[in-house]
Length: 115
Image (tube, rainbow, N blue to C red; front, side):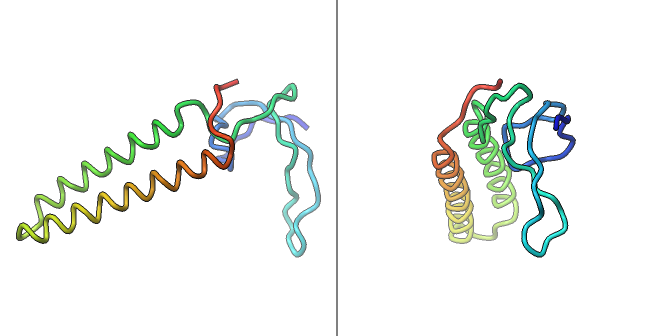
């Protein structure tokens, strides 16, 4: 079966309009939706779970959000101690998000160039 994938999918590397091939299997036990498996690019090329520069772009995005949050903290905090605590908490959240994403990418074998 061949189709243009119109929806967001578990593979971060797929882009709208890319053509893929897959097999269709029965639904999970108790389910009603059939399952796609053996997903490849049209022509059989393997689909990497993450595109090249995915992690770098993710990290840049997290840092930008951190900057926005710190700006908001500066404009709403009432004293130095509260300001410091909120900034440290925001940094810790961003660092955890980045570390978690690094682990996901590493577990999936890293990133690959677009096909």
